[in-house]
Image (tube, rainbow, N blue to C red; front, side):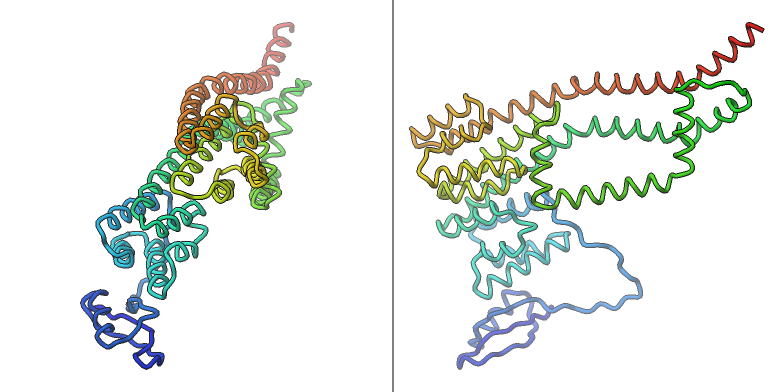
Length: 406
């Protein structure tokens, strides 16, 4: 049978700790209750397993799919009336993600020691967003934790769908550009050097296009290490730059201005804002707190700054619609829908309609994106092939022409 470690205080208020053996956690807690011990910390004892094999595997990350599954299970368990500590421990035992099991056990331990559920989840800000924690806090205070988990499930599923849309929007151009880079590398390293030796034997003046290709090939072969060093340093420097608040704001602002993709990224962020804000308002979160939370979770720092401006406007007593219009992010149709929502007291439902409106536009833009990008990539590829063809075949044509004259 498993062993359990515990800490607490006895009937006299003295600190006690130790281990006990029981069939399961519930049986162990009953034993401690019988001994009149007030438990402050409780966990299953770690069993040392001796093995000659070294485990090099890294713990799995907690993905968005894991969070969706977790909220679904918590919704089902809380709706069935299962105590939350028992639910968390049961899910920790059943999950195949070791990292998630550690997190759930830590949350359960915090609850046993007297913490609130929202506070326990707040210990892991890199895993659970501010929206996640706030919804749980609302669920605790209203006594409808099951409803909070239900709304979180819908929210996370929409987040997963949004990320899939972003990947689908960028997959095709990235694939084509990567293929072009690989083709250029192969041509520079393996093809051009063979032609260079032939051209050298000719002893004739080479066209400018051919000289450029040969110089590029020679540089790639002789200084490949420098190219890799510059590329690697640039990538590392770029990721470090965009992790800073200033760098992230600059890049998110530039993303909204990218040709073809900028409007798509903007609509995705605004759809996320409308859907998340509607969920917060329908759950009873005050409008100012909802704006401050959503500003951190729209996925674009530039739009987040605009939402913070909306927060300050509402705090000064301005209408939500007027502060939204001042940002310049929303279309007149969306502003009109928000205005109707304010007048009728149904901002949350109107914001859901706004999110639906943006998602329809996103679907339309995704369908048009491939049709818009494909001609541009084909023109670029055609120009590249033309340069290569001229660089390789012009000297051969010149040589054949000279031989024909002779």
